[in-house]
Length: 306
Ligand SMILES: [Zn+2]
Image (cartoon, rainbow, N blue to C red):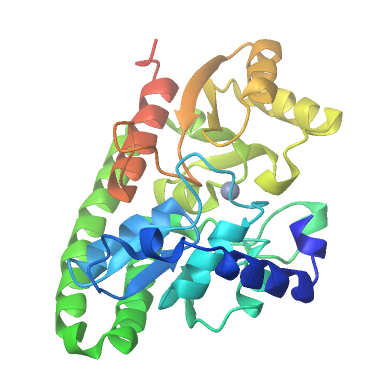
């Protein structure tokens, strides 16, 4: 387990990875001498690229579709990170593997969620801890952008004005997306304003859109649904006559299909939270992710999906 890997072992991995012969050039090929920024997952990489413009090379450590909470970094990840000029992480306990990952590295890092007003996770084991999925509110992502602009300005002061201008333009897009999200979901009648998902990743989006949130498990790191969690979700669906339920792209939707079957409701579709899709998929950017999720939720809850 990554969590139990000692710092010495991590350092050893870095050293071993760094000692591999003949690998240095292919990692840096195509970066054209620009500073390299690594993010922990694809959503942050897309947001960061919008701020970076052409001035920086931005890459994600984890690939599209990866489970990011309990990810186990590889020796290649460590070597890429050791060569990077800046690492951006979400923070709020999202990346369980991250602290140990950066502890062994001499690379600056910035936490992009710094300053966001968080919502707590409801659930015994998580009591008092913030829900890490703060990017699911486009309003919060304005703070992510501000932190990214500041970190890039420190990394590459010569382009600080461009980063600021790029960030301002992107924040305008975020406002438009946020307005669209609220408008898309405002058509739902009061009694159908329930969002039932596998992971409790939608607290911020549900708050913005005025939906009641219900989920099977609080955080994907523990994606083994207990019989109590399944029963509780089925009861919620029946009691509230919920028209459709959803699951996220990075986990199995089997438990939620079980809830849908037993609760007498429809499986409304796959939502994207913890990862973008590949370039040819439905959500290659963060803005598309929010638009896609809002559209899928509105269509399924109003019966337009089937
Ligand atoms: Zn998650």
